[in-house]
Image (cartoon, rainbow, N blue to C red; front, side, top):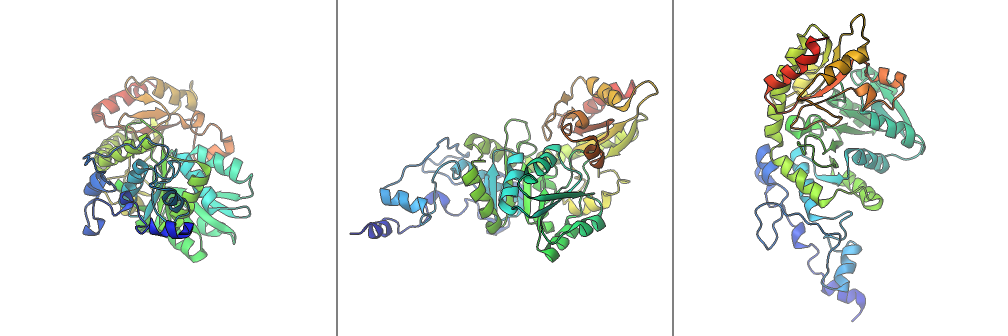
Length: 424
């Protein structure tokens, strides 16, 4: 018997049992909370109720032919945990279902997801068009590394639809935005950008980290790829690092090959933490948003606050757009920027630092999307590597404070912020 014949005889079933259909039949049109609790899981012969953690680097095959079939793609199953792991796959399947995407690809961090996007969809000579209002590390990645490898990068104001249209070039391959953005929580018109991209054969990539699928599904609004820093709200308790991309099978296969070859992999333990975090995502986001709406009203009425950047406020320029794009009633996210007034004897940075340093409960940290309220000064932390000109274009002023509203009693959050604001 030839080797090829043995290969065929031993692999009549081309699919490993753990790669079969989802334990939850998504064709039955379950609600988001049911999907968040149950989708993606594949129980083993042990019959475990909670999702298992598969802390294994490799897998055992029934024969040499079985191993060959896995490696050459003739059989679908686990190969090596750099790119196939049951715990990671459960998280990917659950997140894809929540985002209404065909497939998700998990990465080691949110920035790992953005790097994967760049490597999968851009090459030397291509043009990346992005919003000015981005996380500082994203701008650093685009300017310092993608440009280094021959990708042209340019930026426009995320609010300005005309500027987006005018900035499109014949070699534009990706339009990238955050909506809401970091740190000012600005909103992009995803529907407009989708039409622009489709008319010019461009991929639209939307970072949905701040809204999460509990508030917004960019794919339903016309985006091609959704990016997440799972480290934030998908976990929700500031425990582990991770990222993800969500989109069509075809686009995610391209992202998967980057993760497989580049090793930008999520660990099984982290994937398990994120899977458990998804179970409470919608419930947490409801509570986050309720608190944030009240904190924003407090800030906008405080005499020592000159501006509040939060789309939940009725006079925010993107309030109507955010209301239309966010499917949760009253859900505008829980990240906001606010600017403090400087006195005659104090400059704006010193005033912002005074407010931050006067807190007794709120955590001074650059992380966000945590159950604990966090506060930071973007100009000297998350965006400090940007030039003064780049910070100005992103709206990151010296008096700006970024607040991630947590799940504490809202009265306690407000009292803690008032300590510094009242004494300016």
